[in-house]
Image 1 (cartoon, rainbow, N blue to C red):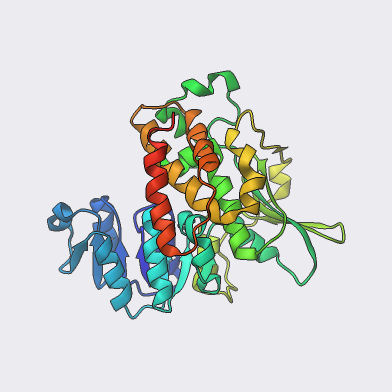
Image 2 (tube, one colour):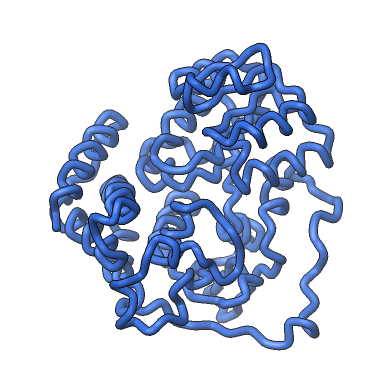
Length: 356
Protein backbone atom coordinates (compact mmCIF):
# COMPACT_ATOMS: atom_id res chain seq x y z
CA UNK A 1 0.00 0.00 0.00
CA UNK A 2 0.83 3.69 -0.20
CA UNK A 3 0.54 5.51 3.13
CA UNK A 4 0.03 9.27 3.03
CA UNK A 5 0.59 10.88 6.42
CA UNK A 6 2.63 8.09 7.98
CA UNK A 7 3.79 9.94 11.10
CA UNK A 8 0.37 11.14 12.29
CA UNK A 9 -1.77 9.11 14.68
CA UNK A 10 -3.75 7.44 11.87
CA UNK A 11 -0.56 6.70 9.94
CA UNK A 12 1.09 5.16 12.99
CA UNK A 13 -1.96 2.96 13.62
CA UNK A 14 -2.10 1.98 9.96
CA UNK A 15 1.46 0.69 10.16
CA UNK A 16 0.60 -1.31 13.29
CA UNK A 17 -2.23 -2.99 11.37
CA UNK A 18 -0.03 -3.48 8.28
CA UNK A 19 2.55 -5.26 10.42
CA UNK A 20 -0.15 -7.43 12.03
CA UNK A 21 -1.43 -8.60 8.64
CA UNK A 22 1.88 -8.70 6.79
CA UNK A 23 0.97 -5.98 4.29
CA UNK A 24 3.85 -4.49 2.30
CA UNK A 25 4.28 -0.73 2.46
CA UNK A 26 5.50 0.47 -0.94
CA UNK A 27 5.50 4.22 -0.26
CA UNK A 28 5.66 6.33 2.91
CA UNK A 29 4.66 10.00 2.73
CA UNK A 30 5.06 12.37 5.67
CA UNK A 31 5.57 16.00 6.59
CA UNK A 32 8.51 16.99 8.77
CA UNK A 33 8.73 14.40 11.55
CA UNK A 34 11.89 12.90 10.10
CA UNK A 35 12.97 11.08 13.25
CA UNK A 36 9.80 9.00 13.37
CA UNK A 37 9.89 8.54 9.60
CA UNK A 38 13.38 7.03 9.86
CA UNK A 39 12.11 4.53 12.43
CA UNK A 40 9.26 3.61 10.08
CA UNK A 41 11.65 3.20 7.16
CA UNK A 42 13.82 0.84 9.19
CA UNK A 43 10.85 -1.35 10.12
CA UNK A 44 8.79 -1.32 6.92
CA UNK A 45 11.44 -0.88 4.21
CA UNK A 46 9.40 1.16 1.70
CA UNK A 47 10.61 1.47 -1.89
CA UNK A 48 10.02 5.23 -2.01
CA UNK A 49 9.68 8.03 0.55
CA UNK A 50 8.15 11.48 0.03
CA UNK A 51 8.45 14.34 2.52
CA UNK A 52 7.19 17.91 2.65
CA UNK A 53 10.40 19.94 2.41
CA UNK A 54 13.38 19.41 0.10
CA UNK A 55 15.81 20.72 2.72
CA UNK A 56 15.03 17.67 4.90
CA UNK A 57 15.91 15.09 2.24
CA UNK A 58 19.49 14.65 3.52
CA UNK A 59 18.12 13.70 6.96
CA UNK A 60 16.07 10.78 5.61
CA UNK A 61 17.68 7.35 5.79
CA UNK A 62 16.65 6.19 2.34
CA UNK A 63 18.09 6.25 -1.17
CA UNK A 64 14.87 7.28 -2.97
CA UNK A 65 13.47 10.38 -1.29
CA UNK A 66 11.39 13.08 -2.99
CA UNK A 67 9.58 16.17 -1.73
CA UNK A 68 6.43 18.19 -2.39
CA UNK A 69 2.91 17.52 -3.61
CA UNK A 70 3.84 16.84 -7.21
CA UNK A 71 6.05 14.02 -5.99
CA UNK A 72 3.11 12.54 -4.06
CA UNK A 73 0.96 12.54 -7.18
CA UNK A 74 3.79 11.01 -9.23
CA UNK A 75 4.39 8.12 -6.83
CA UNK A 76 0.65 7.36 -6.71
CA UNK A 77 0.59 7.24 -10.52
CA UNK A 78 3.71 5.10 -10.80
CA UNK A 79 2.96 2.76 -7.90
CA UNK A 80 1.83 -0.84 -8.34
CA UNK A 81 -0.07 -0.73 -5.02
CA UNK A 82 -3.85 -0.99 -5.31
CA UNK A 83 -4.54 0.71 -1.97
CA UNK A 84 -3.83 4.30 -0.92
CA UNK A 85 -4.35 5.20 2.74
CA UNK A 86 -4.87 8.96 2.79
CA UNK A 87 -4.27 10.31 6.30
CA UNK A 88 -3.06 13.74 5.20
CA UNK A 89 -4.48 16.75 7.03
CA UNK A 90 -6.31 19.54 5.23
CA UNK A 91 -7.21 20.52 1.69
CA UNK A 92 -3.77 19.40 0.44
CA UNK A 93 -5.06 15.83 0.77
CA UNK A 94 -7.62 16.34 -2.01
CA UNK A 95 -5.40 16.07 -5.10
CA UNK A 96 -3.88 12.76 -3.93
CA UNK A 97 -7.40 11.36 -3.41
CA UNK A 98 -8.40 12.42 -6.93
CA UNK A 99 -5.17 11.03 -8.41
CA UNK A 100 -5.60 7.68 -6.66
CA UNK A 101 -9.17 7.31 -7.97
CA UNK A 102 -8.05 8.38 -11.45
CA UNK A 103 -5.48 5.57 -11.32
CA UNK A 104 -8.13 3.03 -10.35
CA UNK A 105 -6.89 2.57 -6.80
CA UNK A 106 -8.96 2.03 -3.67
CA UNK A 107 -8.69 4.86 -1.13
CA UNK A 108 -8.88 4.22 2.60
CA UNK A 109 -9.83 7.77 3.47
CA UNK A 110 -9.11 9.62 6.70
CA UNK A 111 -8.61 12.97 4.93
CA UNK A 112 -11.97 14.59 5.74
CA UNK A 113 -11.39 17.55 3.47
CA UNK A 114 -11.45 15.42 0.31
CA UNK A 115 -15.14 14.61 0.66
CA UNK A 116 -16.08 17.84 2.42
CA UNK A 117 -14.72 20.03 -0.38
CA UNK A 118 -15.16 17.77 -3.39
CA UNK A 119 -17.66 15.05 -2.55
CA UNK A 120 -19.82 15.81 -5.60
CA UNK A 121 -16.97 14.86 -7.93
CA UNK A 122 -15.53 11.81 -6.16
CA UNK A 123 -16.40 8.22 -7.07
CA UNK A 124 -17.62 7.00 -3.68
CA UNK A 125 -17.36 3.36 -4.79
CA UNK A 126 -13.57 3.75 -4.58
CA UNK A 127 -13.68 5.10 -1.01
CA UNK A 128 -13.48 3.13 2.25
CA UNK A 129 -13.85 5.55 5.20
CA UNK A 130 -11.56 5.01 8.18
CA UNK A 131 -13.08 7.58 10.50
CA UNK A 132 -14.61 5.78 13.48
CA UNK A 133 -17.99 7.43 12.92
CA UNK A 134 -18.41 6.49 9.26
CA UNK A 135 -17.02 3.05 9.88
CA UNK A 136 -19.62 2.70 12.64
CA UNK A 137 -22.45 3.71 10.31
CA UNK A 138 -21.17 1.34 7.62
CA UNK A 139 -20.91 -1.45 10.20
CA UNK A 140 -24.52 -0.94 11.34
CA UNK A 141 -26.08 -0.71 7.88
CA UNK A 142 -28.68 -3.38 7.13
CA UNK A 143 -31.24 -3.87 4.39
CA UNK A 144 -33.83 -2.02 6.47
CA UNK A 145 -35.42 1.37 5.98
CA UNK A 146 -33.39 4.08 7.75
CA UNK A 147 -34.96 7.08 9.47
CA UNK A 148 -31.83 8.87 10.69
CA UNK A 149 -28.07 8.35 10.90
CA UNK A 150 -26.39 9.76 14.00
CA UNK A 151 -22.71 10.17 14.80
CA UNK A 152 -21.21 11.09 18.15
CA UNK A 153 -18.85 13.82 19.27
CA UNK A 154 -16.58 14.05 22.28
CA UNK A 155 -17.43 17.72 22.77
CA UNK A 156 -13.81 18.83 22.45
CA UNK A 157 -11.60 20.73 24.83
CA UNK A 158 -14.28 23.20 25.91
CA UNK A 159 -17.32 21.00 26.49
CA UNK A 160 -17.21 21.78 30.23
CA UNK A 161 -15.92 25.37 30.09
CA UNK A 162 -17.84 28.44 31.20
CA UNK A 163 -19.21 29.73 27.89
CA UNK A 164 -18.33 33.30 28.85
CA UNK A 165 -14.63 32.37 28.92
CA UNK A 166 -14.47 30.84 25.44
CA UNK A 167 -13.55 34.06 23.62
CA UNK A 168 -10.34 34.18 25.65
CA UNK A 169 -9.36 30.56 24.99
CA UNK A 170 -5.80 30.15 23.75
CA UNK A 171 -4.26 27.77 21.24
CA UNK A 172 -2.81 25.78 24.14
CA UNK A 173 -6.29 25.51 25.67
CA UNK A 174 -7.72 24.05 22.46
CA UNK A 175 -5.20 21.22 22.57
CA UNK A 176 -6.36 19.85 25.93
CA UNK A 177 -8.75 17.28 24.51
CA UNK A 178 -10.60 15.38 27.25
CA UNK A 179 -10.36 11.94 25.63
CA UNK A 180 -7.20 11.64 23.53
CA UNK A 181 -4.26 13.30 21.80
CA UNK A 182 -4.54 14.33 18.15
CA UNK A 183 -2.86 16.81 15.78
CA UNK A 184 -3.22 20.56 16.25
CA UNK A 185 -5.76 21.28 13.51
CA UNK A 186 -8.15 18.41 14.20
CA UNK A 187 -8.09 19.20 17.92
CA UNK A 188 -9.09 22.80 17.18
CA UNK A 189 -11.80 21.46 14.84
CA UNK A 190 -13.02 19.25 17.67
CA UNK A 191 -13.27 22.25 20.01
CA UNK A 192 -15.29 24.31 17.49
CA UNK A 193 -17.37 21.27 16.41
CA UNK A 194 -16.31 21.92 12.81
CA UNK A 195 -14.85 18.42 12.80
CA UNK A 196 -18.28 16.93 13.42
CA UNK A 197 -19.83 19.19 10.77
CA UNK A 198 -17.27 17.80 8.34
CA UNK A 199 -18.13 14.24 9.35
CA UNK A 200 -21.84 14.85 8.77
CA UNK A 201 -21.00 16.09 5.28
CA UNK A 202 -18.83 13.04 4.67
CA UNK A 203 -21.70 10.81 5.79
CA UNK A 204 -24.05 12.61 3.41
CA UNK A 205 -21.72 11.89 0.46
CA UNK A 206 -20.99 8.32 1.55
CA UNK A 207 -24.53 7.20 2.32
CA UNK A 208 -26.67 9.54 0.22
CA UNK A 209 -29.58 11.83 0.92
CA UNK A 210 -31.26 11.42 4.27
CA UNK A 211 -31.47 12.77 7.79
CA UNK A 212 -28.18 13.14 9.68
CA UNK A 213 -27.36 14.44 13.14
CA UNK A 214 -24.71 14.35 15.86
CA UNK A 215 -24.80 14.22 19.64
CA UNK A 216 -22.13 14.38 22.34
CA UNK A 217 -21.21 11.10 24.06
CA UNK A 218 -18.56 12.04 26.60
CA UNK A 219 -16.66 8.73 26.84
CA UNK A 220 -16.30 8.15 23.09
CA UNK A 221 -17.41 4.53 23.33
CA UNK A 222 -20.37 4.86 20.97
CA UNK A 223 -19.32 6.12 17.54
CA UNK A 224 -22.52 5.88 15.53
CA UNK A 225 -26.21 5.08 15.82
CA UNK A 226 -28.92 4.37 13.26
CA UNK A 227 -32.60 5.05 13.84
CA UNK A 228 -34.59 2.65 11.68
CA UNK A 229 -38.08 3.47 10.46
CA UNK A 230 -39.53 0.61 12.51
CA UNK A 231 -38.69 2.53 15.70
CA UNK A 232 -35.57 0.60 16.68
CA UNK A 233 -32.11 2.09 17.12
CA UNK A 234 -28.75 0.32 16.89
CA UNK A 235 -25.48 1.64 18.26
CA UNK A 236 -21.86 0.80 17.45
CA UNK A 237 -19.77 0.40 20.61
CA UNK A 238 -15.97 0.07 20.46
CA UNK A 239 -12.98 1.42 22.27
CA UNK A 240 -11.64 4.53 20.54
CA UNK A 241 -8.96 3.08 18.30
CA UNK A 242 -8.42 3.76 14.61
CA UNK A 243 -7.03 0.24 14.23
CA UNK A 244 -10.51 -1.26 13.83
CA UNK A 245 -11.70 0.81 10.82
CA UNK A 246 -8.19 0.63 9.33
CA UNK A 247 -8.20 -3.16 9.62
CA UNK A 248 -11.51 -3.38 7.75
CA UNK A 249 -10.22 -1.02 5.07
CA UNK A 250 -7.31 -3.39 4.52
CA UNK A 251 -9.38 -6.58 4.77
CA UNK A 252 -13.20 -6.36 4.62
CA UNK A 253 -13.51 -10.04 5.68
CA UNK A 254 -11.95 -9.19 9.04
CA UNK A 255 -12.35 -12.16 11.39
CA UNK A 256 -9.49 -11.56 13.82
CA UNK A 257 -9.55 -9.78 17.14
CA UNK A 258 -8.42 -6.17 16.87
CA UNK A 259 -9.67 -4.59 20.10
CA UNK A 260 -10.74 -5.63 23.57
CA UNK A 261 -14.53 -5.57 23.92
CA UNK A 262 -16.24 -2.75 25.78
CA UNK A 263 -17.12 -4.00 29.27
CA UNK A 264 -20.39 -2.24 30.05
CA UNK A 265 -20.22 -3.23 33.72
CA UNK A 266 -16.92 -1.37 34.04
CA UNK A 267 -18.29 1.58 32.05
CA UNK A 268 -21.22 1.80 34.44
CA UNK A 269 -23.06 4.63 32.72
CA UNK A 270 -22.94 6.83 29.65
CA UNK A 271 -23.67 10.55 29.30
CA UNK A 272 -25.22 12.17 26.25
CA UNK A 273 -25.47 15.90 25.56
CA UNK A 274 -27.00 18.07 22.89
CA UNK A 275 -24.70 20.10 20.64
CA UNK A 276 -25.86 23.65 21.35
CA UNK A 277 -25.25 26.77 19.30
CA UNK A 278 -24.15 28.90 22.27
CA UNK A 279 -21.12 26.69 22.88
CA UNK A 280 -20.68 25.61 19.25
CA UNK A 281 -21.91 28.53 17.03
CA UNK A 282 -21.02 26.70 13.81
CA UNK A 283 -24.00 24.41 14.46
CA UNK A 284 -26.42 27.12 13.26
CA UNK A 285 -25.61 26.22 9.64
CA UNK A 286 -25.77 22.43 10.11
CA UNK A 287 -29.16 21.79 8.52
CA UNK A 288 -28.58 24.21 5.65
CA UNK A 289 -25.20 22.65 4.88
CA UNK A 290 -26.53 19.08 4.86
CA UNK A 291 -29.15 20.23 2.36
CA UNK A 292 -26.43 21.93 0.28
CA UNK A 293 -23.44 19.60 0.72
CA UNK A 294 -21.55 20.91 -2.33
CA UNK A 295 -20.92 24.11 -0.33
CA UNK A 296 -18.57 22.13 1.89
CA UNK A 297 -15.68 23.65 -0.08
CA UNK A 298 -16.68 27.03 1.38
CA UNK A 299 -16.65 26.01 5.03
CA UNK A 300 -13.45 24.02 4.61
CA UNK A 301 -11.54 26.92 3.04
CA UNK A 302 -12.90 29.42 5.58
CA UNK A 303 -12.05 27.09 8.44
CA UNK A 304 -8.45 26.59 7.32
CA UNK A 305 -8.03 30.35 6.87
CA UNK A 306 -9.60 31.04 10.28
CA UNK A 307 -7.41 28.48 12.05
CA UNK A 308 -4.32 30.04 10.49
CA UNK A 309 -5.41 33.45 11.83
CA UNK A 310 -6.20 31.99 15.26
CA UNK A 311 -2.82 30.28 15.50
CA UNK A 312 -1.19 33.59 14.54
CA UNK A 313 -3.20 35.33 17.32
CA UNK A 314 -5.00 37.55 14.80
CA UNK A 315 -8.47 36.43 15.93
CA UNK A 316 -10.00 34.85 19.03
CA UNK A 317 -11.25 31.30 19.37
CA UNK A 318 -14.95 32.15 18.96
CA UNK A 319 -14.09 34.17 15.86
CA UNK A 320 -13.26 30.95 14.00
CA UNK A 321 -16.96 30.12 13.70
CA UNK A 322 -17.78 33.73 12.77
CA UNK A 323 -15.32 33.62 9.86
CA UNK A 324 -16.85 30.37 8.59
CA UNK A 325 -20.44 31.57 8.89
CA UNK A 326 -19.57 34.87 7.14
CA UNK A 327 -18.07 32.93 4.23
CA UNK A 328 -21.03 30.55 4.09
CA UNK A 329 -23.42 33.51 3.90
CA UNK A 330 -21.31 35.15 1.19
CA UNK A 331 -20.64 32.21 -1.15
CA UNK A 332 -23.77 30.34 -2.20
CA UNK A 333 -22.82 29.08 -5.66
CA UNK A 334 -21.96 25.39 -5.66
CA UNK A 335 -19.00 24.26 -7.77
CA UNK A 336 -19.92 22.74 -11.13
CA UNK A 337 -16.67 20.84 -11.62
CA UNK A 338 -13.37 20.07 -9.95
CA UNK A 339 -11.70 23.21 -11.30
CA UNK A 340 -14.45 25.23 -9.58
CA UNK A 341 -13.60 23.55 -6.28
CA UNK A 342 -10.03 24.84 -6.39
CA UNK A 343 -11.10 28.28 -7.62
CA UNK A 344 -13.72 28.68 -4.89
CA UNK A 345 -11.26 27.45 -2.27
CA UNK A 346 -8.80 30.18 -3.26
CA UNK A 347 -11.48 32.90 -3.35
CA UNK A 348 -12.96 31.95 0.03
CA UNK A 349 -9.55 31.93 1.71
CA UNK A 350 -8.86 35.44 0.43
CA UNK A 351 -12.27 36.69 1.59
CA UNK A 352 -11.99 35.01 5.00
CA UNK A 353 -8.67 36.64 5.84
CA UNK A 354 -10.35 40.05 5.78
CA UNK A 355 -13.93 39.18 6.79
CA UNK A 356 -13.74 40.33 10.44
